[in-house]
Structure formats: structure tokens, C-alpha cells
Image 1 (spheres, helix red, strand yellow):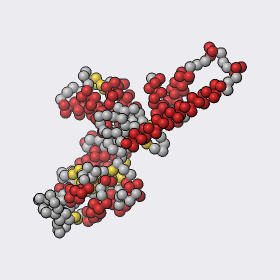
Image 2: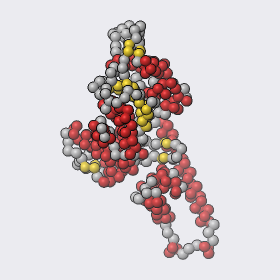
Image 3: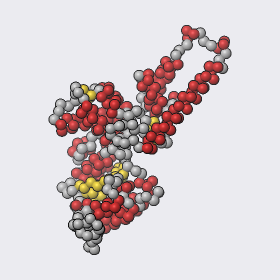
Image 4: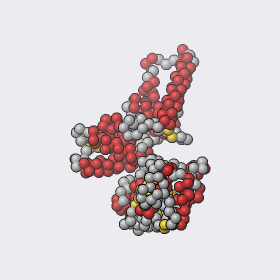
Length: 369
């Protein structure tokens, strides 16, 4: 099967080389029973890849069972995975099959596996190594044939170092690792994904497919997407639902997107101020306040430096009034030149201009560049 056929058959929408390389690996491992670990930020499409691997495998006619380890309370996760016998604990009024037994012969997708308690990790490791487990309250061992695909938005090596995740389970899971890049690192996918979501939403709701204007695509391409593909899907669907004339412009999307966040070489503190999709994280608020303070200090220093330079100019050095160029024009021209020099790369342009990216984004908007 060719890569493009694999993508179209199993729902992977992309034209970036990074995703193409991941699809190539997925195709290679799909036919085996080897464990796969999928990592990446929340919303990048980890479940899409898990589903594609299952559908392309010899287990495709068997169940694919999705389990979000972070959404199940710690006290009942073990019961959900391995099942229980009647009377095994308070509330166990009947025998119950666990997800491993339900997925027998198929694939078990363990999403957010970093949230799994250490005690449950021990039992999971045994199933991976022997294919055997005991339901809670049972004295009989059950055997299953299940392929494991795990996913996490955390760095599991860091979790191992912090002793929150077992190193032996980590090594067992990461036989094949797929790291899906965030949407901001594959911007060539934004337009094709937006068109895909538009088409799907229109078909599901039996409405004419709206038009996505050029300026709408520009604002989508320039946005940071802290929520990745999931946020893009939500934004597109919300825009369609709120549209009155079937034409989606930049102004349609602007209220649905937060301000561009700061990106630095050594850290990543996205400021996500969306009021309809998710709650604002306290760490993000703290990061935003830190960066605002940094910007203010930067502007104060620049103003102080300019004041010192002006005061040091001697009368004979002053140019005629007719030759004075307004500072905002000089600044705008410098920004335009920096963007041209870096082929539109705002991170590099900000570095050349010795500005933070937040300040650069604000000035681009201010000067309508």
C-alpha cells in the first residue's frame, strides 16, 4: 500500500513531510503485533494514528478499545482494565469483563498512559509480557491476545526520571515510538485540515459548504494553535455555526482565537485566552504575566536608551528638521526588512530585531504589516 493510499484510507489528512515520514513508519509496523508508543501535545492526532494502525493491521476485524487512563478515577482503573468478580468490592454486584478481555484478538489503545497509577502499571507490564491477568476478586488466570498502542502528551522519560512511571514498562512500550509534531511546526497542513473539517461539518449537518476566504486562511496560518488540530477543528466548526452568509473571513475567526503567544528557544509558555473551548490554566496565566512584565521592562529600557542617545547629541550633530524620519516609520521599515530577510519567520525576525516575539506580533498588528 502506498503512503497516500494509507492516509486516505485511514483518515490521516496532511501534506507535510513530517507526517508523511510518520505514516511510513506506521505502515511498516501495522502488520506486526509490536507495541507502539505515540507521543505529542494534546490535540495533535494521536488517536487518529492509533486507529489507522489498527485498521491497517491483521486485527482490523477485531475490536479497537480506547481507554483514557486520565479520565478514569484511580480507584476503579484496575477494575476497568482487568474486570472483576461479583462481590470483589463494595458495588461489585455482578461479574464484569475488563477492557483487556473485551479487546481480546484486537487492539487496546491506552491514551494518557502517564496518568496510570504505579500499582496498575505493574499489572499492565505482566499482561504485556505474558498475556495473562486475573480479574479483581478472581483466583483464575485469564489469557488474552491483545496488541497495545499507548499514547501520552508527557515526556515519559521525564516521568521515569521523576519515578512516576516504571522504567521497565516504559522500555516495553517504546518498542516503536511515533512523535507527532504540533500543528505550528507543520503549518502547510493548516489549510488542508481546515478544508477537510469544513467539508465534514457541512455533510454531517446537510448544509452548503461555506467559502473560506484568503484572509481567513492567512489568520489561520499565522495563529499559534496551542490546542493543535483539535482546536482548529473546533474553531472551524464554530465559525460555520456562527456564520450568517456562508463566507468565512478573518473577522469570523478573530473572536475565536487568542493572541499569539511568546515562543522562546528554551521554553514554551503559550498564552491561551480562549473563553469557549477550554479553561485557562494557572501556569499559562503566570507565564503570561511574566512575559508582560518582561515586555514592559524591555520597552522601558528602549525608551531610556533612546533618551540617553538624544541627550548626548551635540547641536552641530543635529540634522535639519526636513531630514527627520518619524520613529514609527523607521521601526516599521526595520520589521518589514527583517521579515523579508527571514522569509517570514517571525521567531528569527524577532531575534534579529532583539525583540520578544510577543512585541513583534503586536507591532506587526499595529503597523498592519
